Image (tube, rainbow, N blue to C red):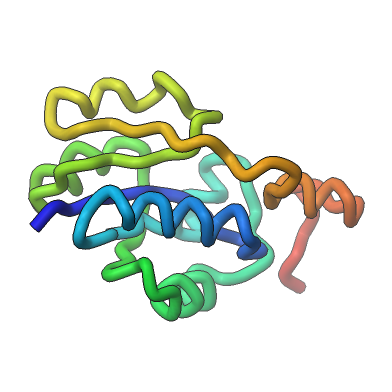
Length: 136
């Protein structure tokens, strides 16, 4: 079985997210998603509209996703790849080159982003900044 992994926040889920998950799954037989925890997003200076548990619930409902695990830090990727016998690491091409250190452990693939849509664009169109307090 060929196993694939990707990571992200997957907030304000949109067509681009689903396309990324579909294309990642097409690279193997099993797709694991490392979902950024609320605490890790705070470390990155990001604030998700949707809680970790709700984002996890939605991802688990997508047919391309086999397993969702929490991502709690930048340095867990090597461990996740090794402990889960991952064959392919996938990220959007806006991260091109940033995860090449994983080539020692698995194949690294950067997929093109879906044109015209992103969570950042949605937030910008709505006049929302990552620093805005979504939860009250």
